[in-house]
Image 1 (cartoon, rainbow, N blue to C red):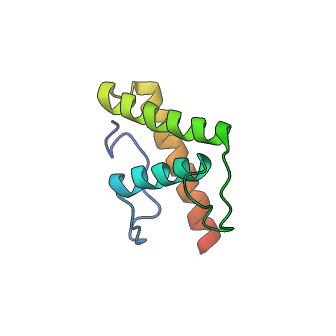
Image 2: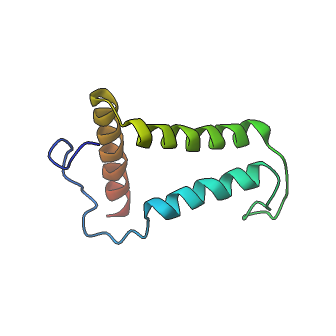
Length: 96
């Protein structure tokens, strides 16, 4: 994985974020359960099977597992760094 020296500085440094890898994985898992119709949608309470969304979320978890097993290549590291930086900048700009 890219270290801090290969990515731009975090513009959200100091903003309290309560996310860990574990909470992220549980969040994706919960989203998959909702899409499978195994849990109600938090906003509406509706229970509905959404096969394409369920497959997408499950495949995303599988891809994360594979990437953590094998590692990211340099192009993937740069892409991830750039995307995260740009999203953080957008967030900071909208919350000023």
